[in-house]
Image (cartoon, rainbow, N blue to C red; front, side, top):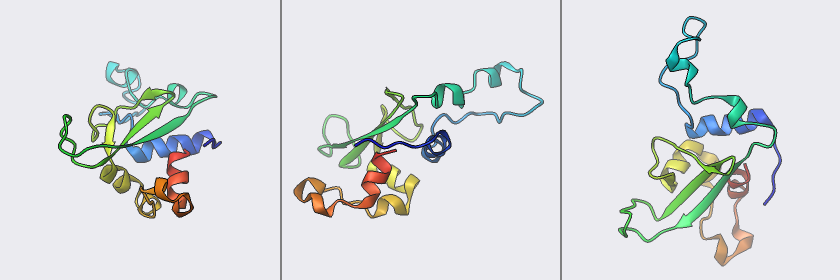
Length: 130
């Protein structure tokens, strides 16, 4: 699937996921401190001209080698690199985490779409297309 969008939508989606959260807010008083100079939320690296966000859905075996809690896992790639999200493990997020972050938009998603492509909900193309 190929979907085009603009920088504000990409940044809003990254923000909704909780990506690149900084421990200190950026203010006029602390702008030149080392903590703020090494901040994670940097729009020039997050959303360059060709910036992108991809989501890969995995169907895993519960209680396997990785001791996952959810059968479905989502890997988010920011500019082709795995994203670090605090609530996720080794760049894999539980489907329940994704549903919580994106709320009603994902709630309409049918994860068994391979058995009937006509049942594919709009939420999947919207979320996975960002």
